[in-house]
Image (cartoon, rainbow, N blue to C red; front, side):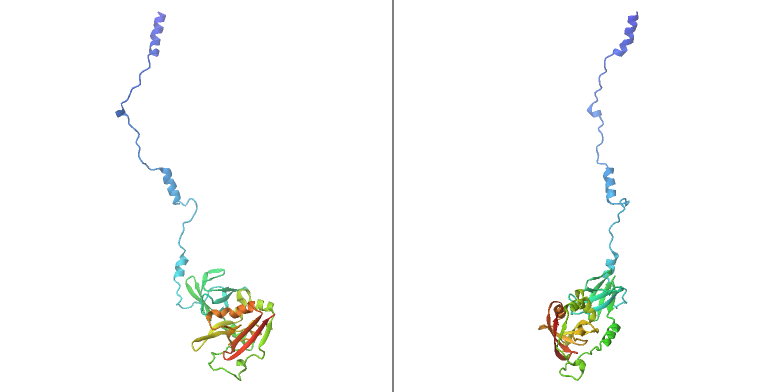
Length: 293
């Protein structure tokens, strides 16, 4: 009887393994495959656009000063200069590519040489627009400013040297009883090379302060370069040249072309013997031989 009971209890646990139910393919629901938003790519796109400025960078923006500079009117009225520089000298050749101007920053003893288009050192919002015979025109953030030579200073220096600014000479030439129109007593002079080098200065910066050379015309034709504002004790004065003298040739090379404005400076810098032909006070033809020792 015990055996019969045990058999009846174990029968349910020894029943065969049920067969798997085969589901017809038509009844199986496949997963949906669609091109949904990829949030990782979306995040990368947002980060690339720096929408939240997570990297702390700033986007490129146009420089407002560029638009102001384009508004510069070269024909406008000159405004009082606001730059911290003073105009010391000019070499005007009539060509903006070759004309030079010497500017000295206030508080400094060294001057810098500039051409048209150069920016002012330490004040780069201002640039040289043009160099004229008696002034320099600046483009200062779109504002036209003009630097003019200190006429009071030039006149004081000329008065101290015993010379005077010459009036525009007449075409008449020849001998004159006026000492200012007579050739120097001696037709030759000598200068120490060390003195000449120092008097010229780096890039001719010092000689530009000692006087100006400007194109001189007579009867609508260029004759040479006229000296203006020669300072007493300068290289010009020691070479017996003064304000009003017109340099017509250097070492046989005519100075009747605007591009020849540097011929005398270059000769003083490189040559040992220099022959200068000039018109004293713009009238009397003279010759000066300079020896550099």
